[in-house]
Picture 1 (cartoon, rainbow, N blue to C red):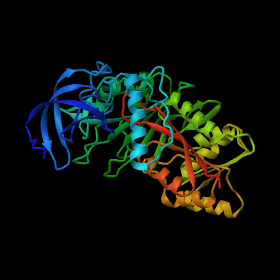
Picture 2 (cartoon, rainbow, N blue to C red):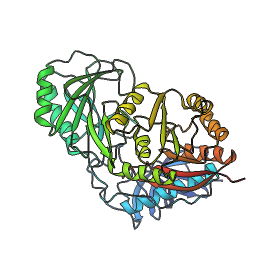
Picture 3 (cartoon, one colour):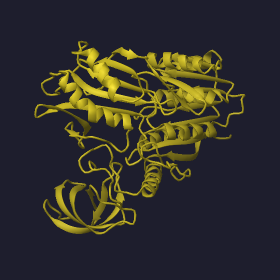
Picture 4 (cartoon, rainbow, N blue to C red):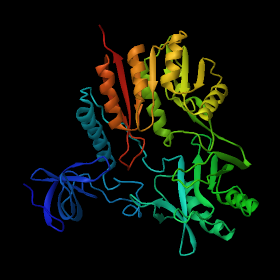
Length: 454
């Protein structure tokens, strides 16, 4: 039995990476998790905590480095929780994500379908079209940046290597501008102060920029001066918006949104499809890889122009409209009413009349559609991180669409749901990871699923 205890120092071999990017070493079968360590490395560690089934250790020295170890280019990497694996080469990141997805498929879902090599980016920097920047007050001054790992302590930053130049300008320039204009930062402990977050959204194809100020109340001191300051500091800004969130919560947005200047939305394009994006619209944050992701979903749908398609978590219609270009009809359902309004507006914007969008729970709306004769040859799901609602999975099994395309941001819940679908008569044909979030441990996955032949 393992006798490791706190403050022990030892040399270990790193075998794997966890889902959050920590190295894994095993001492007589006992797992130790070590931040900053990479597979294929021999490292010296200091044990900081031991639990019954696993422990944690601090990296002291890399004795034999991984061939994929690189110097993290970001000066904030050791402090900020935004990126976890900048010290792993990009080629190594893609291999890691493929292996992670494959291991999860086998371990959780007992899924034996092939997991292909991760589709990565040619330029994996400055890819985020949306940045949510928290503000706080430290030593009497406004600071802005991103949180330290597992905390709400802000690392004051001047730039970020995965967000846009415009977002960097907001972080760097607006701190002093807003402080000079009398804007106070919200304090989570005292629940006092005005400014909670600033969100910057940039459309890749049009270059339009939206700046959103999330505040605790509607009254905004020196509102006109703030608008002018943003206009002067941020290139290509076309929309300045205020969102009011007075609740004692970590949720970023409140329910009320006001346009202070310019347009209510910015416009972007994925492939040939145009989208109007509002302050609270869900829209994938990596536009380059979004096109790769949606094209993969389209390939797996195998559309000929004669198919009826149901998109069970359609949001603002992103995937639905992409599919509508090659389907006979696409029906989209989404529980958020504002998203459905956006989807209808985006369908109109693209002159796509072979779509129908409806608000409501997918597990309620889809069975009603089937009773009304609105059946699907292909069903697409792109659920939140918690995966598909169990009632929706049972609806799929009962209604038996020929093909299911599953787009997932969480491989663990994907594997769980695939097991349910396979037990219900489906076969997972193949699994394709897509790197939507370089330098982080997150990965998006697209799966092709087909009904088993009798």
